[in-house]
Image (cartoon, rainbow, N blue to C red):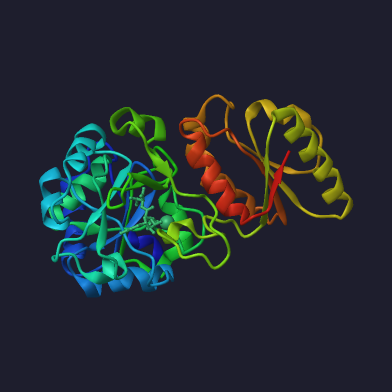
Length: 351
Ligand code: TXA
Ligand code: MG
């Protein structure tokens, strides 16, 4: 099948040189390569080639006002992309790069405006995934890459997810297996007066606080019609096709309320999907529902790792409604809650 030919297997730990060379060639020629990062799969193009970047927007059906992160493989390349980065950017880079932290900084002239959606700031990150690093190095250019999903859909954590969403629209997909973290990088705005988290992600607020002292977190759900600092803060986003209801609050109340809702939905003959912690599963034993076990509730890494894949799996089952619960807002819990809130698009039951 033609589509399958686009999938190239790559060793995620020691990427094969010939595979990387082929992919880098596509980038240099202005094409699109989907590749694994430690967070989610990215849809990459030469960040300094405006026509190549334009193809990203088309492939994803992404609105042109949503800026794209630029990926580098060497801290020194920060000077190429950002104008006079503040000292704190260097310190954060030293502490967290390579890794799931994106820094928003004043844009250098070399960065095409299509990348930043016309903004005078640019978002930069150095991923830690060996395939991503090897690809950037071999391409000899920074790589602009949003998550490799259709706009608004859950981010892809496997090459298969990329194929489902983008198929024919991407020139090459590097299949390096499942990504490690499973939620995207933390986007930290250093161009604001106070360092502000625009999107919680793989680097925790607590870890940033240890270096910055204090960090603001941008409000999760903007009011209708409010101007957005980061379009990633949009209301319904990272969303499955099914309607997702998010239950937040004390655990016992959450589970009781979910159980009640399940009975109600089953009486209405709805197909119901649940996203649960392993410990929650006994409460729904024997119920005719589809359950995605995200893992033990204390293991936030595993829950983050499985989150988007669970939404996609329930969509595949054709469920009408997904009931999900939060896992607090400590550490990775904040990013998990953020993605669930966006997937719920305001359908939140607070107990
Ligand atoms: O982990 C990740 O960050 C993944 C991998 C592929 O690196 N990328 C990713 O990109 O999630 P994307 O495009 O799906 O999300 C980037 C977020 C968006 O919410 C965008 O609005 C924000 O970063 N962003 C990018 N440039 C910005 C800027 N100059 N100012 C404010 N927000 C920006
Ligand atoms: Mg995205």
